[in-house]
Length: 148
Image (tube, rainbow, N blue to C red; front, side, top):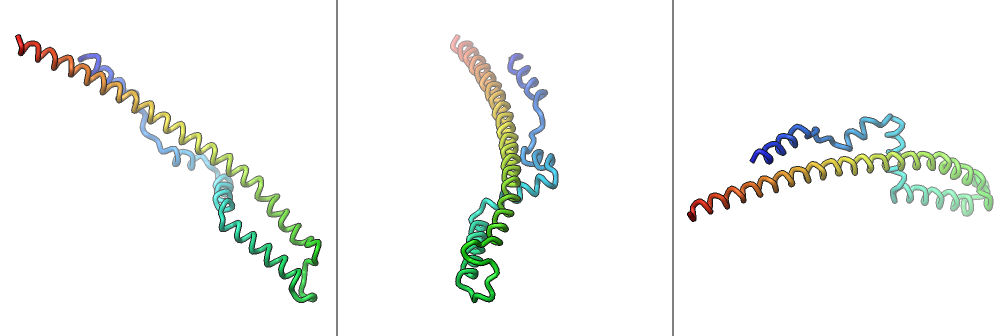
């Protein structure tokens, strides 16, 4: 019986407050980190793909099929379109990589928090099992005394 009580007390003393990995992670981020994550979340969507796709179709369509005097980026080179597209890529690639790295760190923090919760649950389950074993022993002793 003392063994079970000591285990319960040890568990109660060793309990750390439960922490929300999402809140802890967000508190550690700078405003630039938040911006990189925002870019990563919004660029990696079908909406952004369609914006780029339709922008490209309209740009190329206008400069191929539009009135000759109003075309501003002549076919077949589309130099201005290539320049703008490359600038978008140059700026977005590092931001996407930074955002993905930050999201990876967040996933690691969540995994660590999950591990902590699982470890605590395992300790508590072990304590409950010890308690149940002690109860079984006591109940068997009582039954044996009643049979005598």
